[in-house]
Image (cartoon, rainbow, N blue to C red):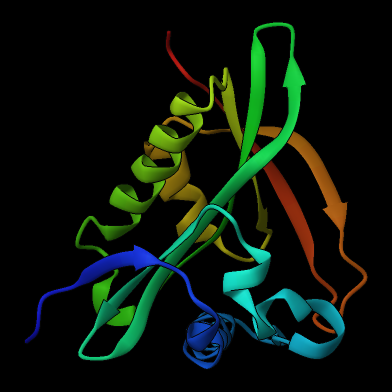
Length: 161
């Protein structure tokens, strides 16, 4: 099997990124990816996402994660982890941890005091991974009013100085 390569996302990755996310959603009942109405940034990801990487293997997108500043606290900026997805063949091998650590590095380089994320309430395996990585569920929940009738849980991680 070819090695997994990490690189910045480009517009040419649109269909591969859409497939990766749609495949992850398909693991859950009534969870659908509607790119045009709900995720139009996935049509030109290189233009939309400034701090976003993909994992590529044998010419296919097999993982993704991004981050951006989402706010601030008195201790410093807060970054948000976005779109951490892995191909089912890479799950359980430490790739999710590596992608989350990349976000931590980006956040620290940006002077962040914390990283937050929102995760679909159905993604219980991902929640356990986030908790192992130091995130805690805050108790906040938000409905997305989307095709999948999704709601998300909020997670928060303080970054050590």
